[in-house]
Image (cartoon, rainbow, N blue to C red; front, side, top):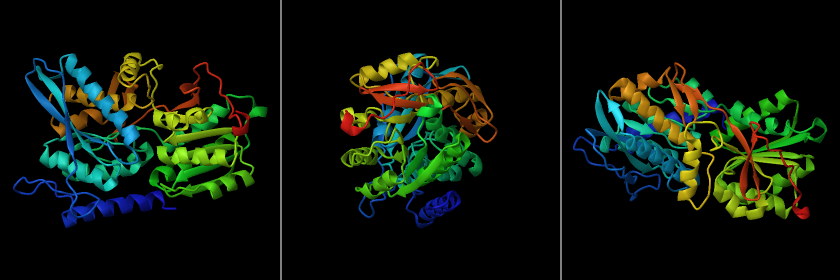
Length: 430
């Protein structure tokens, strides 16, 4: 398995190599656009979508760029992030926009598809900066994409507001232009143990299996889970990685059964998560507790499995039931726009927009250096994620949540919301 340090070096080498070969030349001296894509020769340039904002009486506008996984493995979460970012901008504009030195400025956003690919994310940042003129850019999802994008932002002196990079990784990188709002692997990795610890000690599972994709996302989380298992006094009987997109998990599932594992935690994309769950059912493997990250919280996971998603736990960054200003209203707006489907992620990208808007007002300018200086070491109160404080490295930590799918609904188990954790009901007893 690739170490974290080796991944960081490899990512840096790849992006700098792309610069050297001209593959990331988003705009030449004559202002022409590049036609770069990981698909190779003949591919078209990353597509840019300009979302409309409400009309109003403004003195001008501020253009912000945004990376979004519109296609590829991360499209489920990317769609939610785009909605939240646009909603935040619309809400800010509806209240008069951003006050910049006494002028009312309307926020506008240009979205670009990173195609759930690190190379595309890097190319997208350069296109937004050089071709579209965006000097403030909202971040995408997953560690590999956002780190590749940050390398380019650092080179171009573009403010890149990250929201899904492990904060321990961000602090190690010591970014100058790429503040981060997210979690540590240890904080996320402790959630399943906090959840099961709500039950009587005699009822808790004893042996745990960890299954993660062999990516930097998986590496960070896997190590975090191992550390937290030791902290809480649980045995890790099996720690297994896999290549994303794997179609057959039968041998891994067999190892879990043979190890006597009665608790399973998994990091996977939505498609892989659905495949693993279906194959667990086919082999009638029913651990007492099962939790997944990344691919388990999108509503599409529940829809793909229907009743088979019941009792499976998952992570989340936000809930409309949390006591944050506007949380209930945001949740209601999302459900009304999505056939009563809810979300556990939209609060984070929404809050990132709020932070950028407040920083612009404090700076009295949309100059990326001045806005950055307001974010690094700054505190932003009453956002959609509550009060957010960035340290001097430009990193802010949020509190992770633990949910469970029950009857097609999300139930908050951790932190305590008065709901009791339900143990996994064996497949053949449902």
